[in-house]
Length: 171
Image 1: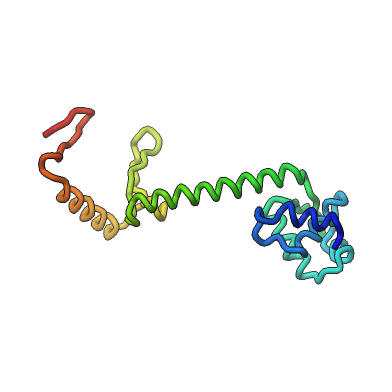
Image 2: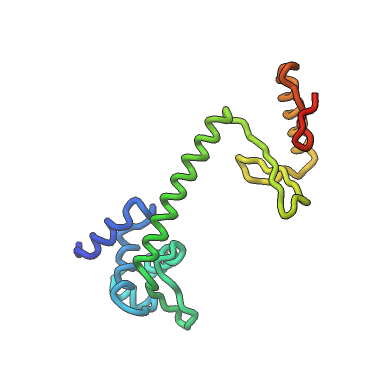
């Protein structure tokens, strides 16, 4: 295997899940020139046309290459280092986000938590399910939410029940 191919594979291993040898060959082919069509890439890499197109779609989707509007379409690497940095940052952020979501799930005892988001000047208020990130909008969901809130209120000892209005406690 070509040394540059090994380096490309090693660079993206663990960052892009589907970064195969075929995708690396196509990417390396584009790194070595300005603009190429899929046919030129296919001839250079000696990969099957379907494999080349799959690799091109994958690379473009991940932001490693760009596609021209010409006919036939051509492909190029705009800024390989910047693209790599962006993918690496996104991967790290997604991993951290998943860890935080797991902490939230663990601390909520597996129950869905609803919370209120105010949009704009506070004129619009929506109940958002934290687990699904979907708005609680249909009648059945809202009734279930109301029942869960009423049940939680019943679970609070009488001595601790306090309502707060405009920053003042009401007993």
